[in-house]
Image (cartoon, rainbow, N blue to C red; front, side):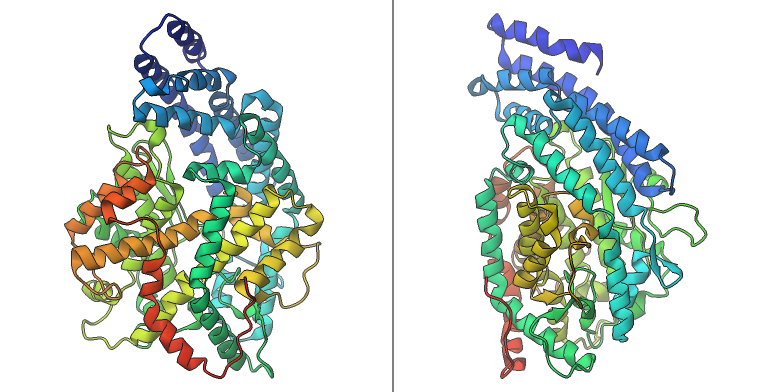
Amino acid sequence: MKRTVSCLPLLLLAGCGRGGDPKMEAQAFLDAYGSEYQKLYYTSAQAEWRSNTHIVEGDTTNAYATRQANEALAAFTGSAENIGQARRLLGERERLTPLLVRQLERVLYLAADNPQTVADLVKQRIRAETEQTERLFGYEFRLGDKKVSTNDIDEILHTSTDEAALRQAWEESKEVGSGLKDGLEKLQHLRNETVRPLGYSDYFAYQVSEYGMSTQEMRDLMLQLNREVRPLYQQLHTYARYELAKRFGAHEVPDLLPAHWLPNRWGQDWTGMVTVEGLDLDGILKDKPREWFPQQAERFYVSLGYPPLPQSFWEKSDLYPLPAAAEFKKNNHASAWHMNLEQDVRSLMSIAPNAEWYETTHHEFGHIYYYIAYTNPAVPLLLREGANRAYHEAMGSLLGLAAMQKPFLAHLELLPADAQVDETQQLLREALNYVVFIPWSAGVMTGFEHALYAENLPKEQYNARWWELVRRYQGIQPPAPRGEEFCDAASKTHINDDAAQYYDYAISNVLLFQLHDHIARQILKQDPHATNYFGSQEVGRFLDSIMRPGMSRDWREVLRETTGQDLSAAALVDYFAPLLSYLEQVNAGRKHTLPEL
């Protein structure tokens, strides 16, 4: 910490004692805090970027640099002086502007993640998180004697009809979790202990508080979402059981879906089950050069009125898989990065020429353009975040959905304008993505992380609780019993490095359909099932009105002002209403076995 910053709180405190203007004092404190925070944040982001893009087995250089950078940031944000000063200034909140109050509350929220009143615990946690990331992304997956990537495993799960090969690929995808179990237990303890000094009961409660909600309110919301989609999910579950049993020649239809039958490592997306007649997007895209995918995503956003991406984005991003001969590894999970809370924006992906990466590229660029929108003088540096965390995901997913609709694809000449697409199958495929995701995100992931942090789930029960939740919410079972020698939860990236926030994605799914419904009906005057956003600058202005304020305004107010509605799953349920009627007919006479909530 710079001397001028560390001295500042004492000077401001003296000013308060003399009856100074708290608005001026608060602004001076925030200006100095923001300047130092940005420098340390950038250094941390650069170290994290290196740790995610250049993983060398046995080399601890990146881990050390990342730990040092994160410890420096933690020491600053969690300093007792900054905590004390923010609290004192908030004691005068009635004399402050709402924007100043929001920034000071943000200072305290950031401090709670790593308060220096427990500095040793914070250092231990940073070290543990860095080591966990290295173990997670440095893991070498193998099928037989062949080294494979997660893309290779996903390809097998998507395309193979050999049940033995599917089971082998699925089980290998979970092997990484076993070596992460002890590290997860350590993080469970350290995350809980570091947030308690600022009054949070546990790490789950801390993360939920960013929404202005209690743990119980968030849990109730997640249960509500699960119940709202349950009638449709039950029909999808029954449909999948019977169709996959037929595909794999099972003598009996299982009550629970075998996990290795599904085209996703965690059963969170079943779209690979369905090929839409007239819409073989994988076949259409397989010969596209990989550079086409990010370039096309940029063209889409530019057509809405946004600027081209800065040249630095193309120079600094890491968008494609590593060559087979590479002597290092990278994180293959797609992500977007706002490196310095200014103009340095980047994306980390492993783009392959298929429909999944086509959609993912549009999704990740949604994050990038959200960063760009709220990087403006009206939004203070500390509030350059989404209106809430789910807004960021909603914007990415919304544009991913829009990019997959037939009129949009026809506009890009990826489909003939008169292509005969089976609309029911297309709707089914979408439901196998968006609806199937709710039990996973609002049920399994949120339930497990609540148990992990709020209930202090013992390590000896990690795998048992995980599969209990998977059965209850998703109606899925492993191909064979999974004992406590495994830690299947830890095979999911977010459990390790984006903890206690997965409900963000559930809320974002609801929010994206609410926004899409408004755009389709109120702006484009189009059927929500068949839209083309491309070239509509009115759509761009609507999205910008949501993105530009960042976190400077309450997320509920932003939603009400832009759509006239509060958060609701009604638009999602309405979108898939025609599919529910279809599935009820298909499943007539079939046995429903999805557990009750």
